[in-house]
Every structure is written in structure tokens, then in C-alpha cells.
Image (cartoon, rainbow over all chains, first blue to last red; front, top):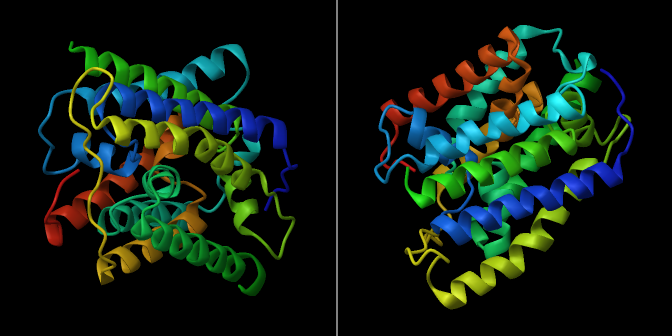
Length: 143
Length: 141
């Protein structure tokens, strides 16, 4: 495990930009910025109707990362490279399966849903935060 | 390209930039947020809090107006029931999040590293989505 410093300034600035992105998407397209739903609607086995906006958003996400990499620094510091591949890939698979089953992820439930005052999103956010904390506790402190 | 697609692309760029600036694309930063018993890094909660501060009032205005600024309908979720799938799915997502340090947004944004590792992580995530949608999936989007 690699310690990371608390970075309140970057966190708030990034969070404000993420909020702006969610508002731009809703104001322009009437859509919530739930990234797991958008990804599944574009890349899943049953592509959603309604045009190319999902692809445009997803490509934009990567372009945002590329812009950061070009002008600021690496999107993922070298310390961020995982050293144990199997748990990471199994984890990513669970993220895909679980966000579909639970109808959302950190963006859809944690930002958009909480902003709407959705009880479903409040419960989902509390649950995935709790199981995430429990998983890290087991992986880092018990195993 | 429709106007909606251009707006969605702009929103995607802003989202990806925001995740990168907040360093949410660094899985260690996410895992350290979840590691209450370790060297806790509370940054993630400020990212969410700042985003909520912006989105809450804007959503309220949009919902009052009932339409997008381009005149289209609002496609906001309408379900209010708490069902087992919501809870079980969120629980699985949290376990995967704690194992990998990635949720969908940062995973996709990490493709900007142009690395095999990011591609593998996104492929595993998409595979999980396919597995769900082909086995249990009833609804898309």
C-alpha cells in the first residue's frame, strides 16, 4: 500500500468540475451522468436507443484525461500501478456486474442520485461505501 | 452530430478533467479513502461534496423547469422502491471497488494512460456488465 497525502484543494477543484460536467449534461441532454449506465448503454450487450450521446460522453472522459496528461501530469502516478493483478481484475469485474445489478455507481448514485434526494441512491451509496471500507479493511489489515 | 452529442462530449471532457485533477484516477487515493484503519486520505469525500454543491441547486432548477435547456425531456430516474437487487448490486460494486480502487469513471478516464493495464481493467469491468446484462439484465441504461 502507498500512502497518499490529503489534497483538499485539488479535491474541491476536481469535484467542482465534475459537478459542472453533470450540470452541463443534464442541462443539455436531460440525462443524469451515471457512468456505469452510460458505459453499459454504449458498450453493453443491449445498446440503448437514443443516439450517440453516450459514445460522445465516454470519448470525452478519455479526452479529459489526455488533456490533463498533456498539460499537467500523469493521470495515474507510477505508484498507482497495481502490483497484484488478479484481485484488481476480479474487482473490476465485480464493479461492472455490481453497478449494473445495483443500477449505478459513484457518479450515478453518489453524485446524481444524492443530488436528487433519491432514497435508492442514498441506500446504494451507504452500502457500496460500507462494503468498500470492509473489503479494504480485510485486504489490508486482516489478510 | 446533434447538439446533444456535442454537449455530452463537453460534459465528458469536463468530467474526465475533474477526475484527473482530483486524482481519483489514482487507485491508491481511492483505496486510502476506504482505509479508515490505515493512513486515511479523506480527499474523496471533498470531491463528492464539491460536486454535490454544484449539482443539487442546478438539478432543482431543471426539475422545476421540467425540460433541458435545449428543450428536450428530462430522463431522470423515477424508481423509489428499495429492492434486493439494488442492495446486492451496490454491495458487490463496493467489494470490487475495494479490491481494485476503480469505479467506472476513473477506470474509463485511465484509458488516457494508453497502458495495457488500464485496457485490461476496463475490459474486465465491461465483461462484468455483459455477464450481468446477459444473465440477470432486464433493463438497459
